[in-house]
Amino acid sequence: MATRVDLRAALAVRPGSRVRLASQDHGETHGWDKEATTPALEKQVARLADLQDRLWAESKHSVLVVLQGIDAAGKDGTINKVMEAFNPQGCSVTSFKVPSDEELAHDYLWRVHQAVPRKGEIGIFNRSHYEDVLVVRVHDIVPRDVWSARYDQINEFERFLADNGTTILKFFLAIDKDEQRERFQARYDDPTKRWKFSMGDLAERKLWDDYQAAFDDALSKTSTAHAPWYLIPANRKWFRNLAVATILGDTIAGLKPAYPPVPPDVPGGLVIE
Image (cartoon, rainbow, N blue to C red; front, side):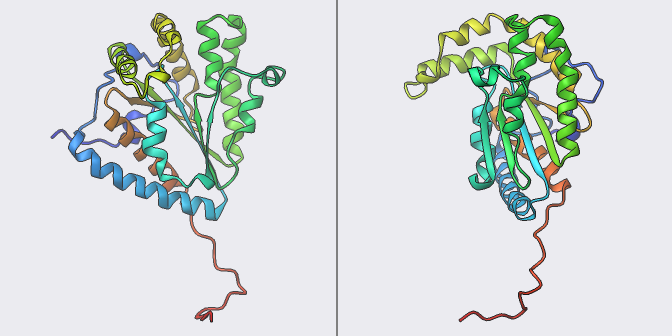
């Protein structure tokens, strides 16, 4: 078996680097095989459950997880398989759909800021504020000078969150065009999943190259030391899940969350009758 690497280091997008998704191997597993991944993922999920409990008890840090990727990249599957570790009382999932009239009446980051997790909590964004440099660009919803200015605005927004105690991890789930086709077909062929299939998915698929260019720029321009992107090869779902769980666990562990001390008025050796 090939040597396994430090996934956090291997998959991080270095600030200032230029990302080109077309040159990436989205089936790369960095030395892992499927058989070994099952127990490793179970271990990471248990680790995440313990870390979340400490994070919640300490109530000092918040963690924001951003999931992005083209249609069928596996955002929902990642939430289902990895985030099952978390107690729902301290974890929220926000899916950003087409903005409502109320949201459109404010700046594009208004609805995002409202969904940022509180201290002690973990927040998961299924899609995010990055739609405002992706979909709006590909579909020409706003002029170029508007969406191009948003890279710096997003970096400053994320810097503000980080400076105020929010640890940000951004995962881009990368699949190739053939893998997307297979997943769409499987979704359509499965009677229990066909409800998730939309003809609009096929219309968006025709814009594949436009989306790849938008993804390249977003990853290149907004991976920072305070809010890094991790480029996850996601053709193989089992590796995707392990990579996200490992990086997330390593990052939260780095915060060293700890249970608070026992209140001074609670004596030792107490026997409750």
